[in-house]
Image 1: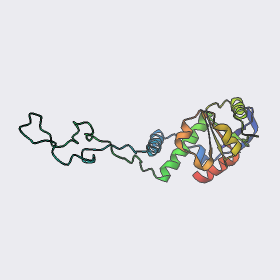
Image 2 (image 1 turned 45 degrees about the horizontal axis):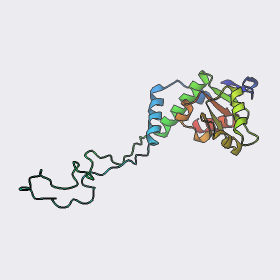
Image 3 (image 1 turned 45 degrees about the vertical axis):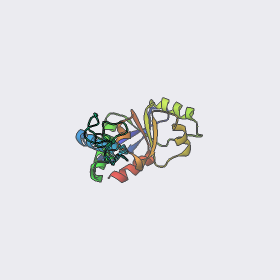
Image 4 (image 1 turned 90 degrees about the horizontal axis):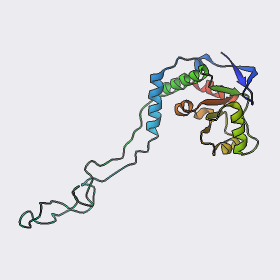
Length: 206
């Protein structure tokens, strides 16, 4: 499939690139993409929340007072959930929220998303994308010309100037071609890729 490159000013270039139909011309599989994205977000959860039940709280090994004759309500331990400092009734426990998604499903979802980006003309392919110095203003101006204020920039290798320039831009992300994930791809308005990054992705997903 022929796909026109984009110039630095945001216009179609006279050059074009051959995109692999196996990667960039797949059907949109909404159910699979939803499953993979849900699993990706679930895997990012720390799951480190923890509280103590009455069995975990220290102390309270003996009955605080005798069963009868004191005039007070019966009590078996000072670590009852009814007492201050007692255990939690339904305590949160450390959990693993990760979901299993095999590599074939993950790659298929990536191909489906990339194909939809092409159909919606949200994929911009450039010869190269470089910043002369680590300056946020320079990067912001380039993205403004490309009409990509909320963008994911994918390169074949991370350029330090580009990475440092993007850190103060809230809606701009930079990543290597081998580190793309479905959440980043669907969460932006435009995806900018260099020609070399396209080649890496095709090799990885073909």
